[in-house]
Each structure stands twice: as C-alpha cells, then as structure tokens.
Image 1 (cartoon, rainbow, N blue to C red):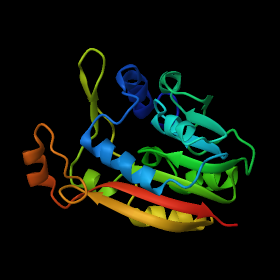
Image 2: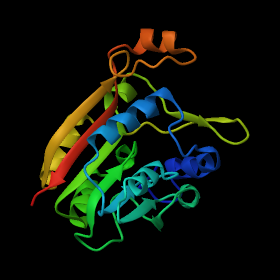
Image 3: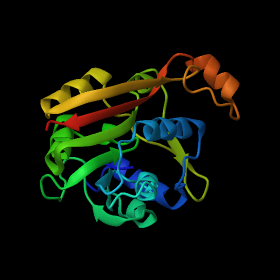
Image 4: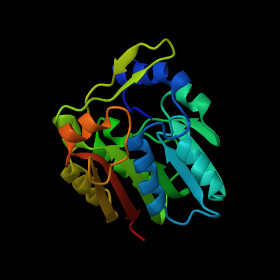
Length: 226
C-alpha cells in the first residue's frame, strides 16, 4: 500500500505500523477476489519492464516476476512496506515518480490509488512513465462502500486494532482523471458483495446480509495513447 501524503500523515504512520504483520499474499476473501480479477486482466508482461506502484509487501511484484517480466520495480512511500517487498525497490509517492519518461511497459497497482491527494496528478505521472501504448492495471477500494460505512482496519503485531482514514474517489472521477491524463479505458469492473464476492468466511452470513449488492472493489485496465 502507498500514500502520497507527507511522512507525518496518519495514513503513512498506519502503513508503517501495519508493515511487519502485513501478509505478502491475499489474506482475505476480498483480496483473493481482487487478485483473481486483476490476474485475469493482466496484459502480457513477458520481457516487459513493469512497475508495481504502491507495492506494499510486493504481491504484484512477485506475480510480475513469475510472469517473466524482464525487470520489475517495486515502489512505495512506506519504507517499512518496501522492506517486505521484492524486485528493485524504490521509495516514491503516487504523484511524484522518480523515473524517466516512457520507461515502463506496464504499471500495476493494487488497492492503493485512492490514497492519492490528487487523482489527476497520479494518473498524469503514471502516463508519463509509461511508454506509448503501455498498460495500466489497478484496483481500488470502491468509494460507494466507504460512503456506505465500510471501514478498512488491521491489527498490528501486538493485536491492537487500527482503522485507516476514509479516502478514495467515485468511479466517475476515475474515468475523468484517466481520460484527462490521455488514457484509453479498456475495462472497468465493479466487484459487488454477494455477486462477485461470494466466498464464505467467518461472519460472512452477516456481512452478505448487510452489504449485498454493494460495490466493494473497483478494477480498471487502461492504455496510454500510442
């Protein structure tokens, strides 16, 4: 996970706290669905130069390496998260990427871009570092779920529970920011509780009864203009 906010922000501090106990693989039903959906939309990356943006503990960096990407860069603003990742690791925020223009064939980001203070700046930076015709594939927690009262929480190594601040952007804001940054949108999927997300888990009966039909995760694939 990543935050573009300054190092003193609550989001940054929470991810620093979360990093030691953050699993490198999908650790709940939502993340398993999110990753399956992302993998199903992943463009061909064999021989490509790829960026895992807001890499967290590097689950997509590992998948990109497994798909035989030529080079994988894992970027995140949290040093503690980066230490858990793999590949060539670079500290970077979402709206200021320390890379030359046009160096990546593919940019992947999992459940993080909603943390950007300015979504348009985030997409403009991604477009800048992608080669013409390069692919962007990302997921994010759905804004509708946050508006309906869902919270993102975790427990640190001591078992203490923390909640992340509510952030994110409506789907239309994603569309508008992508188009303004010069992307061509290929796929938008909104994964809903009780529809796409149906895996049973402890407490799932109550969860699905309350949240049935609510969009939980947004997944988008887009391309920079050739």
